Image (cartoon, rainbow, N blue to C red; front, side):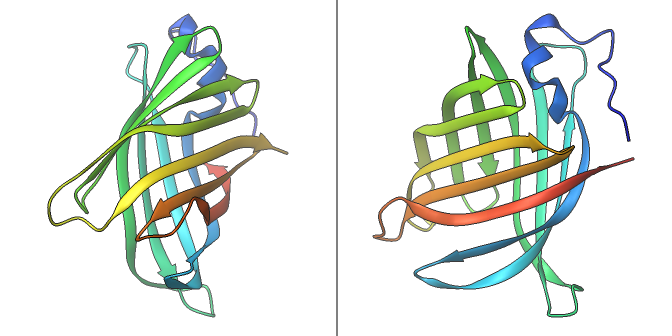
Length: 165
């Protein structure tokens, strides 16, 4: 399905325009403290005419047959272009964690690292993250490394998503 850039999109969003839309797919999540499992994901990236993108992501555990078992993670946030090939990603999670990422944007590639992490007193220990997003053969591919629960920064999750209407 071809993607057309909206004519009302603020010019500073052009490097991020490829992300706009609804995406669905599957991935794998694991960490030394948890067993690796497959998950499904839906991501909605939208713009209301202002110079940022809204990000909504929800994931769910998949069983061996690829059926939804239960919800996993939810994140809401904003992509903010910072000029000169730089970008910010602000994310909030219902688990009591807020992340502020900073990084670079290139054509069809974004790489960000946490610049700050805020946790509520009841949230699990989470210290840092690194995320890579790319448009590969019309699919949104992403990978995340994290440092949490006493572990150093290492692979945590990745997924491959297709644009849907």
